[in-house]
Length: 71
Image 1 (cartoon, rainbow, N blue to C red):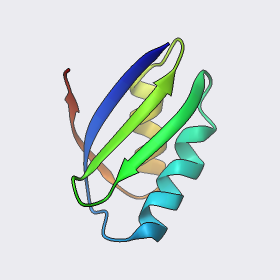
Image 2 (tube, helix red, strand yellow; image 1 turned 120 degrees about the vertical axis):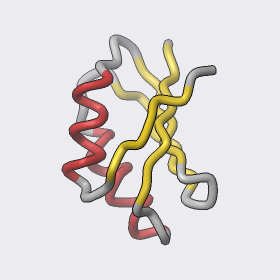
Image 3 (cartoon, rainbow, N blue to C red; image 1 turned 135 degrees about the horizontal axis):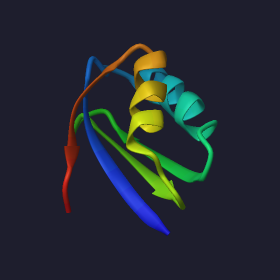
């Protein structure tokens, strides 16, 4: 299982977190989504994760992906 983490702008509340979680959870291979509004990060767990699809899901939810956070 892999974990990818993204720096995301525009999040301000739990509704934002719920919107992102809903969209990202629909991407193939995703098994978990952890949104930290205060840290402006979205962490995604799963197998065969595709950055382009994950970023597109975050954008679809209405937010901007600023960067992939490298561990």
